[in-house]
Amino acid sequence: MYQTDQGTNFGKWTDTISQFMYQSSTKDILNLISIPNKVADYGGANSNMKSYIPNLITIDIDGTKNPDIHDNIINHKGEYDLIIIRYVLHYLNDYEVLELFNNIKQYHKGQVLIIQFTNEDLKSKYKNSINEFKYFRTENQLEELLPHFTKIYTKDYKVTKEFYLNRLNNPNGINHQETLNGYLINYD
Image 1 (cartoon, rainbow, N blue to C red):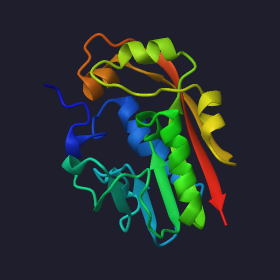
Image 2 (image 1 turned 90 degrees about the vertical axis):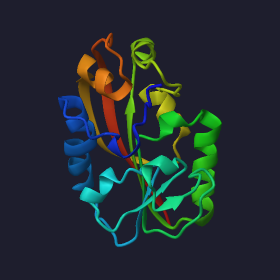
Image 3 (image 1 turned 90 degrees about the horizontal axis):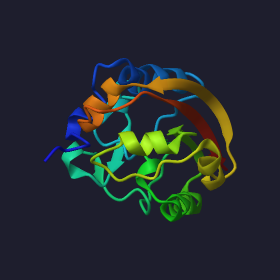
């Protein structure tokens, strides 16, 4: 069976969309904020973000990616100056997203950076996303779930057939538009 998340190799593909999503856009978004000393990457266990933030602490429920802390991010508690949630919210249903932010609000005093793609053409996104079950959202649907935020980044791009071949082993993927957004939440 094809493993959709591919363990520690996740996000390391060489197609232009993967390069944009997992490298260049991340660098651009991180340049828009100050990076403090104690940073947690919720759901980023394969450590892709450590190339940008070496002291990053990864928290993930998927042990195959070798996270620093093996835990469920929905109810994880830890003291961090910044929490990064990158490409995670589509793994959670609406109730779980709300539960995640309610949990963070209970203990976190600092910033939360959310990096997430949205799709206005959900039909195309779901059609391409074989071998997985996810909760894709329009920009409005996503923003309705977020606590008070500031949008710091937005970029439209075209997801290609090659991305779906690399990411999901889908040889029949079709190109479609997508938007990448960066949001900053402050808990003081």
